[in-house]
Image (cartoon, rainbow, N blue to C red; front, side, top):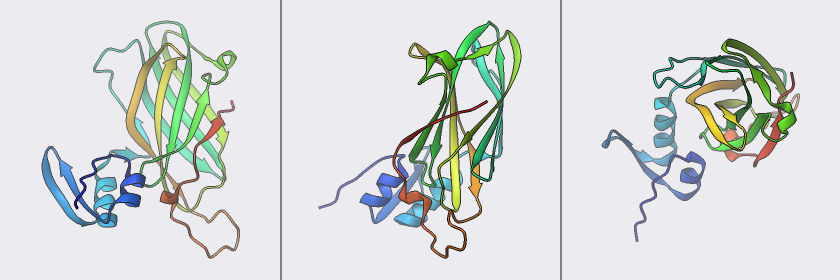
Length: 192
């Protein structure tokens, strides 16, 4: 029997499949061993150290710029949010592993509504920091959104911020574990 499994969740694809086909705009761009196909898929995705966006859809509240970096185990996120209104928002991020599978949910103002962030009309620059759990050496991604918590998303930034972990989580460790193995889902709160 042959089963065709279609997904953007590379962790699940890797665990279920030995062979893969990569499609782009309905055309096959890669076929072969699943690890090679996943590597090609990951290379095609938009990612970088900084995101610059234009508000083409004229949203009321919009992420125009975002930048993320890792210092020790601290994730430092700088964002520029443009707003046409005064409002309070939540800031949410999803930490994705190498295969772009969800690893952790980071939040400011969603899990605790008293921590919503005040956004003024015009340009708002935000600086957020949180302590991440130990991550294995490798590439990770961050997906951003802002919301009126429990009501509606104001903007979802599907471009991915890329994070590179350079050192093994244990000093002197020679063991390297693929970050695509996942650590499960954890909730992490941003600090100011």
